[in-house]
Image (cartoon, rainbow over all chains, first blue to last red; front, side, top):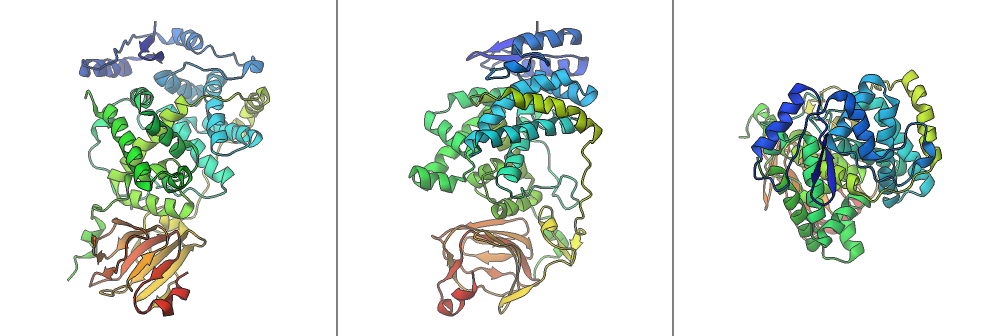
Length: 256
Length: 227
């Protein structure tokens, strides 16, 4: 068995295989004895994983294309990491299909909310998912969760394709990049664990902070424009955003 | 006398963008000019880089939590059908020609460097002691500024937001002293008179979201030129 149930109906796939990762994950459980959410982690042999993932997700099979809809897939955290690894290592179409069924409807909702019409939103979704297929080797689970990685790809494609602008970003290989000092405390968390905690904390935010975060991240509007359109004082928008970020950051640093 | 350039290159920024601006950058909500100045600060500031990574993780968690929208079955079929094409033509990393590291003697980090041609900045005199090279035109304008040593800028305020990132040398205004990597935001409530440090020219990346408005005696004379 390889699922752990966390509060609020969140089911996290504690899909672990291989010795080192399993040990690391158990370490976190040990390091966080006072964690409010009980972590139940079990080792699963790799050959059982696929069935378990499919059961958890209830995802249609590769050939069952007609069923693509609002599948509220339950694939979580490390299971998603493993699916991307399968795509990277073996060009696994079935793993890709599961990633598609999980992320494509979410990406479509994101793009529609940022102003794309239905057809354009689906075009960009296709583009983002093909980017995932092409760049699966570049995914590094120690740097970001799959959700965060795909979010940044979708954000950049949105700017590129919908806004027709360039997205200026740092170049990690630039010799002039100022080197990072020691990793911060939250760096020691597994990215999938960070995401699980963040999702839990998002659900606990006061309604006005959560709504402001959705506007900030999904509506393609800087906070100054949000303030003007909602007729909220700029100072109120800023303080709500800051309060939300302080709460979210706290869950990353707690229990370490 | 000012500190040697090499020491200043290693300066860890002490003045940072506001958290909300980093959220806007992580969310992809800023226009290109504002994104450019934030991203160039990130190249010089590991702390803010890390902060943006945290905000991106928030974006990822929010994407996971969004109410999914039904997708047409045709979209899935179209993507699955194209997987083989993509394998046949793997993404070739575009051999981008980026200008050399030390461009015209300036150590400009990415992404800023790629906005300049190989020849480096083409300085245009604005007023005595101040030259600029335009990187992005439009209502949100990005320019490189070069202020001669010890020169005081005319006192001015702003019709919109302005962000200034120091790349070489330094300047002082009523709020503080700014060196390489330091980030200064101003808005219509702020009237200031930056003064460049002595010793070497102060090079800045400056973004204006609306034209500056001079408030000093030179105002009527100069305002038409600062657009």
